[in-house]
Length: 363
Ligand SMILES: [Zn+2]
Image 1 (cartoon, protein in one colour):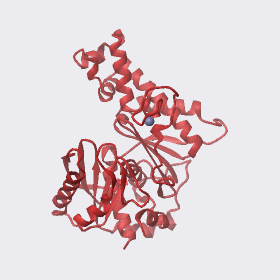
Image 2 (tube, rainbow, N blue to C red; image 1 turned 90 degrees about the vertical axis):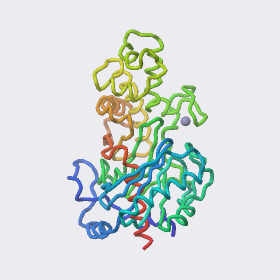
Image 3 (cartoon, protein in one colour; image 1 turned 30 degrees about the horizontal axis):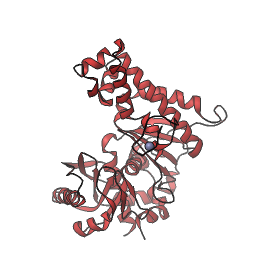
């Protein structure tokens, strides 16, 4: 039995930790009495290592059954060579495994995995093309390895231990350089028919709009991501607008150096132009979420990623635009929109937990 089908067959075991958080009101709650015993059983299982492979760094951490990180280590991503990336993973597992007794290893990476979870079909940052990564690593590490998309891993972590606990129909959005998306439905990750669901960032929201890396024009991630924020602020600064003076000051007068992170920082310190730029991004975010609500009808959107440090500067306009564009508004309950709770370690925590739960299910 492969991991993904094991997880879905045994989904009653995979409810979020009920002792971690007070119940929310107004949304579907899990029935605690029916799941507590299984959960305590899962909770006694051993430690797992979660590894988050990004374009610039590989982060690893030892994670316990309640989603706590006990120790961490990281390395630079060693170029695009698949063998070199495997070597770094092995090094990190050996280093952390020397201190902790590890049962399993979960790997989260940007890209598409096949439904079986054994093969990376495509990864944008790395040279993995139809790479049988799970088997390679299991051979090298001599432990069960769980391979997952980084957005799925982050969504799982938020559902198990973070802002999405108790939600039966969760959509998680990660706002970074692009937009990552994932769904946890009835206690399992929904990957679609071919394993590539959740590419919400590439819904076309402005036909003929900005060109996207995916080859299309007008994708949502060209309007509601950290990259979009940086681009809009650069355009404003390049126009030499007097409202952009704080932005220009922050980059010594060179508009090319403006990034989404710089704009967010300035917005938080009160710069009106940066606040406006984030408000625009928030409106695009809310519009896209309304589209997703029309299609998926979730109970909650959890918004994570670097752009979230803007907090309510981003979320307030997003909630307004969502309410304004929601299909059937006024005649239907609306999904909540909340910030993610686990920060940049969500992917690592989720990958570890998925490997722990999955290896538990395989006995
Ligand atoms: Zn696209």
